[in-house]
Every structure is written in C-alpha cells, then in structure tokens.
Image (cartoon, rainbow, N blue to C red; front, side, top):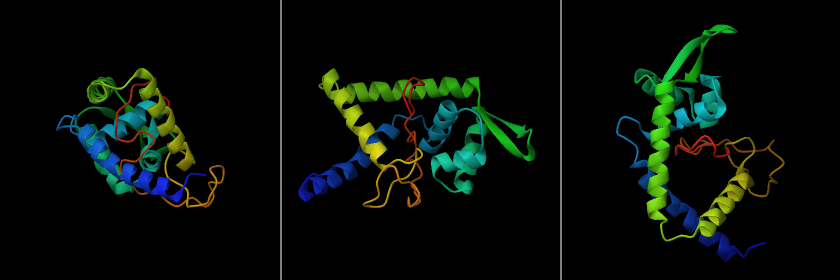
Length: 181
C-alpha cells in the first residue's frame, strides 16, 4: 500500500482536476452547458430511458434532471415519447440533432485535449487513460458513486450516496461512442 504522504499528494492532485474540468467545460457552446452534455452523453451511451433512470445515472435529484431534460428537449436534441408501460412516464431518446451535437462536442473535447497534451507521447496518454480508469473502478459500483473508506470494490451494499451533479459514468465530458463506459 502507498505511503500516507502519497495519498495526501494524490488528494491535492485530484482537487486540481476541477480546474481541468472547468477548462474543458469552456469548450462547450453557450447553448449546451455541461448538464445538457451529460444528458446527451448518457442517452447515447445507454440508449432510451425514463427520466428516473437518467437521474440515477447523473446521480442528481429528479428536479435537476428535469431541468436538464427540458433544456435539451427545448432545443430539439432529444425526443420524449409516452412510455408504453406507463402512460404517465416518458421515454427519452437521443435524436439525430442531438447525436450531431454530441459528435461536435466530442470533437471539441478531443481537440482541446490533443492541444493541451501535445507534448505527451501516445504511451503517456495511454498510461493516463489506464490509471484513470483504474482509479474510477476503485470507486465505482454501478457507474456512479464511491465507496466509504475501507470498503472493498466488490461490496456495493454499504456505498454512500453520491451527489455530484457531473460526476457521472460520463462526466459531463462528451465522449465518442467507441469510448468504453
């Protein structure tokens, strides 16, 4: 196990990731904030779903999810259809306009990352991807949320709730469809 001082440094480095995420969010067009990008990304990754499932994947309250969904629906990026099993519910689907926007957002992110990491080797970028995926899986039980200290990754029963709006399986950073969840 790593020394306590290494974990303290890791905590400092992870805190600084917030600045990286804010810089990446700046490449989003004004009409598509990070919450909207997260909705589009999750619908692309997981397919059609009810709003309750989307709220679960976003790890936010239904009222927050509802605002994000209203925003993307008003702009014509998703379709809302009655749920055949429960006419009171709606099924959310990414439509071609939303897919096109998601591709544009993904390209913006890729170009921004490529520019910021232009002095990194392919191997270094690969190592970062591997280590970040491993870090995330150390905290993941179902695609969102972390474990309390001392809980093993296979034991999800005692997982504490996770309430960070954009810390999702697809953090509000759009990804290309080939990127694994």
